[in-house]
Length: 122
Image (cartoon, rainbow, N blue to C red):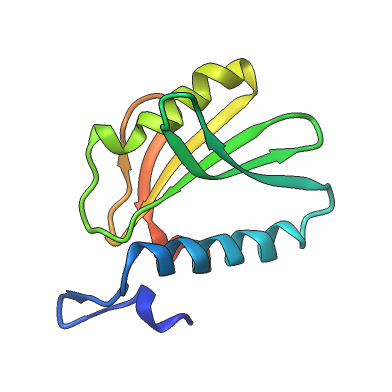
């Protein structure tokens, strides 16, 4: 288990956002390689500089967006890039996730959820 993804004594031990994003991207790439179908992993940024850290697209064009946060709180603004990706992708957009340093999964609307970053590791 990646040690910084656990909580000890109520203290978050994710060192910073760059590390969280890097480790999460590595894990998504690893898990995508186990699939029977090919998935493309990309990054999304629009003209307004709103972005999504990881965009997974399968062979049929289905899209899942992952935004990685090292923090323990999430708000609607954290979904700005995911909502824009959803609009740009239309019916191909299946799910938007903000992965964050908490143990709670929270709905932020249709097909938009905040989930524990530790869920990447099971």
